[in-house]
Image (cartoon, rainbow, N blue to C red):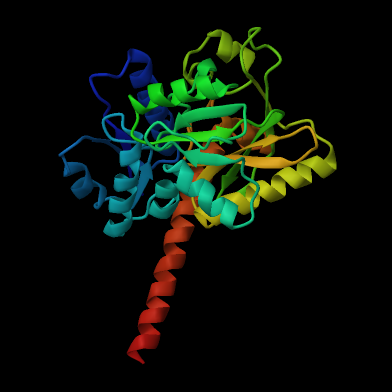
Length: 336
């Protein structure tokens, strides 16, 4: 089978670590596919250059690792939408899911309307937030992912600090979300299609004194940093059966509501001191590196990294075949 791996070509602003993270994952997936004797082509995506699309349409499958264009996460939506319109089978979530997830205030609105537990939130408007907004609150970009813009200063405990942080963030990002900070335990739940992987917990026991127990940018992307060392994932999570069932139920409902149970992704949740889970984010197409969270959950499920990659491929092909069969059936009924 001919498989094209799509990825962000990056920008001049990328650090060597940024480049290494993207290229490293591309090569990991390429190696898995080649071990299965597939023909693999690497297709970098750049602004204003659509040669990748012509080449991608010749493939039997696109393995979509493109999480943005020129380092801008919001442009991932356009790449996915283009793939969807082209008709070529591709891995990961569809355009609806990626678009919603990249606008956190919209995702929260929809999840809340569906009856799912979401912390109180507001979109910062002109450097203003509701006067009665509950504190502490966490401030983050509404249209970014991978913890971009989140550090220890993201959590605010006073109205003055909140106003200052919002103003700082609006200088860097067009849309800024203010969300109620939920103290408690943090969990991740991974999915490939409708299949749920074992729960993982992020333990904050080793965080430096005086820092908030959150997964900020440094914790995810600066190996060896105090935040990285202080946020230790445990998978499978050690939770009572009743709590595990509650987390799993909320995570599945959130995942299927946003993604339709298609592609692969991760739901991040916080559980307060009374055992109530809250959805922080639904993340379509999270990092698929062998040392990232989804691969860790896969290993706890009994999958090797090769298994995980091939389950992602199988999900994409099965989804494509199902849609083709449905389209053919509809066409036949219409013709009759």
